[in-house]
Image (tube, one colour):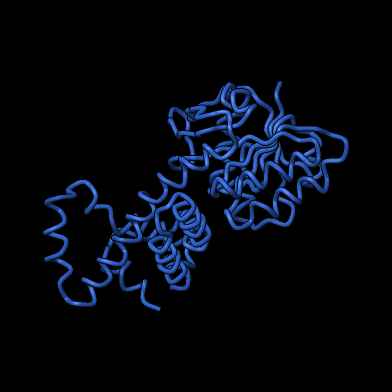
Length: 283
């Protein structure tokens, strides 16, 4: 039985862990020092007393955390790994350059690191959340049975999977920020109904649920700021200017400071009235 250690068992990390557990793996985590919400999200995982217990029990250690914390989490893992040599997988939304730096840091401890990128929401049984993987040992992670996860190895080089994430997230999260900006402006200008009627002709499937989409993203905006900055750096390194997603980072930074951002994602999913959502986006 493969033992998988989940570092930061929030909504995504815990769901990934349960998917692997359903495939037959032993999945361990710790909620030491974490919030009551995280403790609730980690249901179905085997909880151990400390990070050291998780790392030293695992064949594979998976990091799923806000991108700004990826380096700190890796350092925390390296600080307790001792003589144990698990495979590491970084599934955070970071740039190719950032994850290559993490891999070099892990290699200095004699550890291999697989680059991973998650596309979609937390997996559920029968779902197909996509996990892109790259690196010399990516196939080992891809081969793990899971209920709700689909994997694709995109190359042998660490950085390739993160490159995919930076491109797809720029569209998914960038368009959400654009919806928020446009509709908040329409609401303030007194033309929201007219704008929605116009946009519904081009985006008939998106308009009905746009309020919930904006609300849920706002509750995660503090995490998205770092992700937008990583996208900006990735685009700049590719020869595309980074200014657009520096601006997107500013949008999510503003959203993170609103009343709506204080809700949990679960609470935000219950919000269906667009006008109410937009009103709560004011500073």
